[in-house]
Image (cartoon, rainbow, N blue to C red; front, side):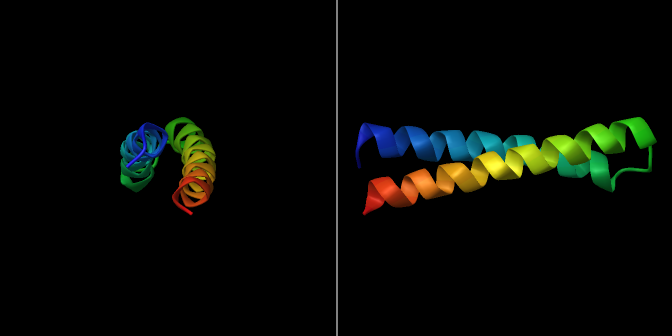
Length: 61
């Protein structure tokens, strides 16, 4: 596996960990400020994961 592909996969794992943390905030008892921030960060992080997935697909073949 190329170093670039390995780096992308590690970045994807890191973003998934971040997304999981935001989803835990969203699943917790409702706090408007925390939920709104977590929702926005969740959406942003998912966009990054999607972009990394496209980059991995481009590198892989």
